[in-house]
Image (tube, rainbow, N blue to C red; front, side):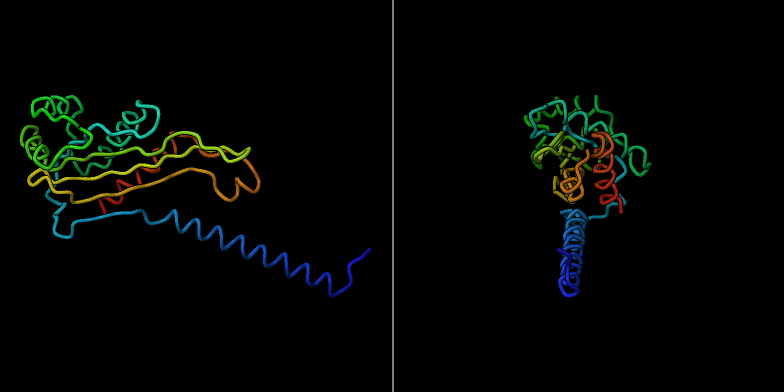
Length: 201
């Protein structure tokens, strides 16, 4: 049975409302994926930081190798900016052993001060990888990374900057139309770059 004029108009209006709601939902999701949780010490002069030590990252995932993989990407990208010198990993490991830091992924302020003195670094960075790998929702799957970093001033052991980033995951389009996400390496670099940009801005 064909639609009458009024019924057809109502259907068109209904479809228009659904489109608007869909666009609003997508906009909200993009907004949520925008600014990350960040803390910056307003009294810290980041211009004085020329040498940093990047501690072994902590992995909250099932794969312990993930932490080293992400740390390696972070160090490489940070060095590529030319903004700071990153103490070599081996030198950091020797400093950790010399200071006898029990938990390198979460050093105490006192340990940070001692380590900074031993390896001549103005700041120490620690990191945590919360999620890394494939996530699924029904028949749709995608890669995701969620990580957080913090920087401590080596002179005092005080936290002067923290940041977190999440990249990848299953978005609205994938839920509606299917399809896979981006490669793991790509979203890892995106998350790392976002954090570095937040740190150096």
